[in-house]
Image (tube, rainbow, N blue to C red; front, side):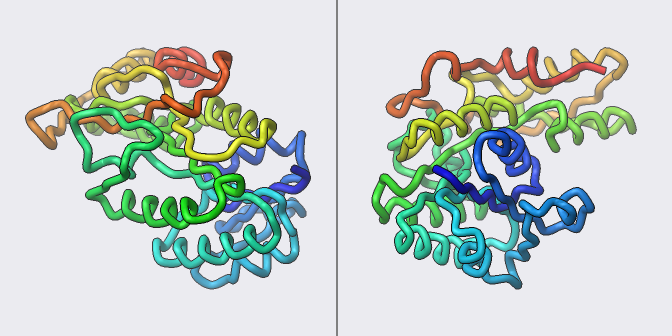
Length: 272
């Protein structure tokens, strides 16, 4: 695996993957928002999902592995991934697709495992399913579907949003009935690095091995930020507990890459 292209490398997850892999591989990335740090980095290429043809970037870089963490217009994402799949089949390369726990958001009574049938009520979840299904039609050796739960971390959009709300004394939305697992940018990128090194393929669930209610998780995070006095807005979407959790059962990573939600709070969400 010599050359890696990360689509969406200017985003939170994509950039975390780039930083993890850049020292070990010939790593490239795409960006959309104009920032000098990306414009001046010759490893980065500007890519407008709705205007540009991804094939031109693929032909220029000729990656052995493409990691898709791109966001944007849903129909444009589908078309781009159709072209990417054509490229990897023609060039015997590989695609890692960053998917989401939302591919199971129509199932509320149980956590979900790698080979459970996907079913979503959300537009976002149905997009992820559509692209997943495209990958499941190609040889397994040329793809990996990486399903990810909510991602936290000291510089994550979710933690920044919490801090911003606390600073202006706005209520924090919490979901008392939502049972979930979580990950961080650090844990996720370490797991992806391992999957690349071992040339693994298939479907992976990359989250904590235990579960917690959304409300309890957010309250524990805020309690670490001792200077704030939070206001919570409890949102009930159902009278019963509902799950949005992706747990591994079949494609297990080694023990040193396992973690629990307390690790995410203790190691990756810093107090100020």
